[in-house]
Length: 405
Ligand code: HEC
Ligand code: HEC
Ligand code: HEC
Ligand code: HEC
Ligand code: HEC
Image (cartoon, rainbow, N blue to C red; front, top):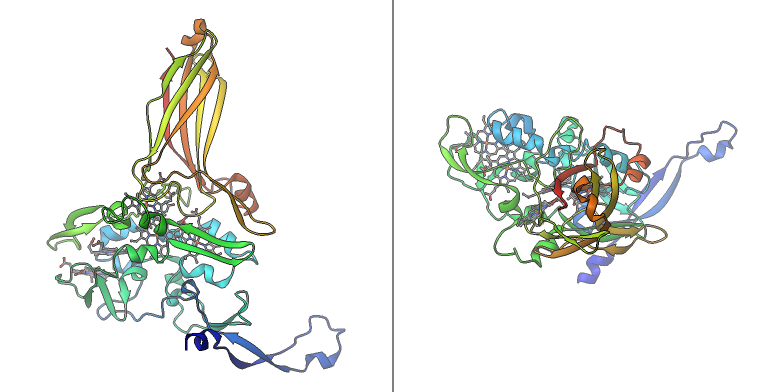
C-alpha cells in the first residue's frame, strides 16, 4: 500500500496560453494548446504551510500587534527577536528573489498559510521550481510582514494554545504543553535535505541538541525563553511566564533594532609564557560552556573570529596579529559539499596557542588584545546580495586587553 501512495501521481489538464512577446511571431502560436502534465503531491514536511487559520472568538485578528494590545510585554519582547524579522530581513528577501530559491523557502519564515499569497497543491513533474499555485483568498499582507508571530506558535483551529489552561482569557484557550514544547522549535530549526545538487538545507540544531549532553536536562525553551513570574496581562495575577526575546547569537537584523544576546563560548584568561629574549607564547582555552548545541549552529555560513593581537600602548598600532576561525566551509558548485567544520560541540574545549616576537626589554611597551566576533555571513555574500553598508552581519562579544609582563 505504501508504494501506491508514493507512486500516486495524478494527471490534470494544463491549459497553457502561448502569449507571444514579439509581434512578428506566427499567429498560429497564439492558439491555446492543451497539454497533459504530471502533478505530484507535496510530500516533504517543509513543502507545507500551516493551513489557513480562523481568528479565535473574542479576538479581532491574528496579528501580533493585536495580541499585544493585551499581552504588552510579550509583544514588546517578541519585537526584539529575529522571529519578528524573519520575513522583512533584507538578507532573506535578497536570497528569496534568486531564481534558485524554491517556493518552500517561505514555509518556516512565514509559516501560516494566511501569510502566503498562494496555496501550493502539488508540483508539476515533481519539480520544486514548478509549484501548482492557487490564489489564497485569506492572504493578509500585514500578517506576512510579522514573520514568525504569536499565531504561528499559539493559534490552531480557533483556539489559542497555552501552557497553563487555568487562566481567565477572553479568547478560547486549549492547554497543550506537547505542542508548546521543544518539538515546536525543532519543527523549523532542523533540516537536512538535498533539494537540488547545489541547494542543500543543512542546519541541524535539533539533532545536535538531541544527541548532546543537555537532552533530558535543558531544552530550547529553558535556555531561550527565560522563566519569570509576572501577570500575562496588566492587572491580572502573577503567573509562571516566559521571556519572548528568543535571545540567540545577538547579531541584529536591522541597524536600528537590537536583539538580545546569549553567549555559548567562554574564554579562559590567557597564559603568557616567555620562551626566549625575543618571543612569548600566548595560550588560552575556548569552551562551548553554555549552548545546548554546536557553536555556531544553524545556517552553515555562520562563523566566529577570534583576533589575538599585540598592540603598541603609545601609538596604538598593531605589531602582530593572528586570527582563528570557528565555522564550516562549503563548496557550492557543481555540487554542494561540506569541506571543513570545526564548530565546537556542547561542552567541548579547544586550546589556542600563538607565538609572538616580543623583545623582553620592550615588553612593557606592548599589550595583548583578544577580541571575538560572531558573524552570520561574509562580506562577500553581503556584497553579492547588494545589502547596504549599514546592514549588520557581525557583532563583537569579547574585547579585552592584558599586560604582557
Ligand atoms: C482582549 C485582551 C486579549 C487579547 C487581544 C489576547 N489575549 Fe491572550 N489572554 C488574555 C487574558 C486576560 C489572559 C488570561 C490572563 C490570566 O488569567 O492570567 C490571556 C491568556 C493567554 C494565554 C495563556 C493561556 C493559558 O491559559 O495557558 C496565551 C498563550 C495567550 N493569551 C495568547 C494570546 C495570543 C497569541 C493572542 C493573539 C492571537 C492573544 N492572547 C490575544 C487577554 C487577551
Ligand atoms: C516561536 C514560538 C512562539 C512565538 C512566536 C510566541 N510564543 Fe508565546 N509561548 C511560546 C512557548 C513555547 C510558550 C510556553 C513556554 C512553556 O510554558 O514552556 C509560550 C507561552 C506564552 C504565554 C503563556 C505565559 C508565558 O509567558 O509562558 C503567553 C501569554 C504567550 N506565550 C503569548 C505570546 C504572544 C502575545 C506572542 C506574540 C507577541 C507570542 N507568545 C509569541 C512560544 C511562542
Ligand atoms: C515557524 C518556524 C520557527 C519556529 C516554530 C521557531 N523558530 Fe526560531 N527562528 C526561525 C527563523 C526562520 C529564524 C531566523 C529569522 C531571521 O534570521 O530572519 C529563527 C531565529 C531564532 C533564533 C535567533 C537566532 C540568532 O541568530 O540569534 C533563536 C534563538 C530561535 N529562533 C529560537 C527558537 C525557539 C527557542 C523556538 C521554540 C520556542 C523557535 N525558535 C521556534 C524559525 C522558527
Ligand atoms: C543549554 C542551553 C541551550 C539549549 C538547550 C539550546 N540552546 Fe540555542 N543557544 C544557546 C546559547 C548560549 C546560544 C548562543 C551561542 C553563541 O552565539 O555563542 C544559542 C544560540 C542559538 C541559535 C543562534 C545560532 C548561533 O550559532 O548562535 C539558535 C538558532 C538556537 N540557539 C536555537 C536553539 C534550538 C532550536 C534549541 C533546541 C533544539 C536550542 N537552541 C537549545 C543555548 C542553548
Ligand atoms: C525548515 C525551515 C526552513 C526553511 C525551509 C528555510 N529556512 Fe531559512 N532559516 C530557518 C531557520 C530556523 C533560520 C535561523 C536560524 C539558523 O541560522 O538556523 C533561518 C535563517 C535564514 C536566513 C538568515 C541567516 C542567518 O544566519 O541569520 C536566511 C537569509 C534564510 N534563512 C534564507 C532561506 C532561504 C533562501 C530558504 C529557501 C532556500 C530558506 N531560508 C528556507 C528555517 C528555514
